[in-house]
Amino acid sequence: MSAAALVRCGCCGRPVPDNAYVCPGCASGLHEHLVRVTAGGLADELDTALARQTKLGGGGGGGGGRSDEQPLAFGYAASEAIWVLRSTLVGWVRALEGDAVRPIGPICRTACPHGSCRLIARRDVPADTLPDMAGWLAYRVETLRHLPEGPGAVDELVAAIVNAEAVVWPSGDHVYVGPCAGQLDGGAPCGADLYAPPGAAQVTCRACGATYRVHQRRQWLLEEAEDVLGTATEIARAVTNLGRPVTPERIRQWAHRGCLLARGRTARAPLYRVGDVLDLAAGVLPVPAGPACEQCAHASCRTIRERR
Image (cartoon, rainbow, N blue to C red):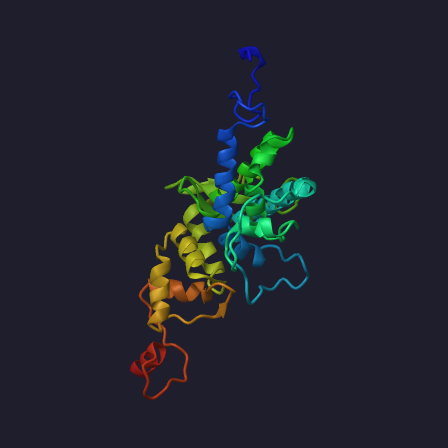
């Protein structure tokens, strides 16, 4: 085949040896991104955030009061990215539903976590969850690269995953300091997410031009989040990004020693109150609620007895 007749990748422009629409390198990159949704922990973070969408600033209703149980204020930054990722996964799953051919190969005889075994054992499309959809698409990357729509699929899926990762696991290039409280032309609330460069004293909203002091905005976020419930990982990431460094392991150790009480639970992990964690990080040791056994080995009961 002459150089002029070479088919080039619709994503990167490199020659494609098998006349597909996407080169093996770009297809491999898409596969790696999809696997990070399923096995890299991204799906867990996104599913938790989706289950408890932010209510801060979205009241609209006439009551005007704050909810007793509000998700992390930092969900402002994640909400749109999560919606985009879910919509993108759903869109490409639906586009490939008619081509839901099972992979070929042996499968485990007993129950297993292998996505390939599930796909071989059944022809139906995946459940409407981020891990199932991403895993289903990961096993069909080779199909995608041979479709005319393949380059668009690669670009959209990779962009959606990278965008979600940047929100859930910020790189540190910019600091999230909450939603803008200004007004757009015509008087409509702005609500745009505000990001400040590291070390910046002020941040200006690009949508409406309102200016804020970064320190005050970060303090506002912490105060708004005090009564919010979150997992150890969520709280550690959020308060560390706002200048109160703490690790998930330290939060779990506080809970193990009876200094921090779980206020709820998800299917995967206990939920703690952000304000309780902030108090402990500041050296304030609350007395756990009783009653306590008079003689036992429970860490919480021992702590209550010692502080009576």
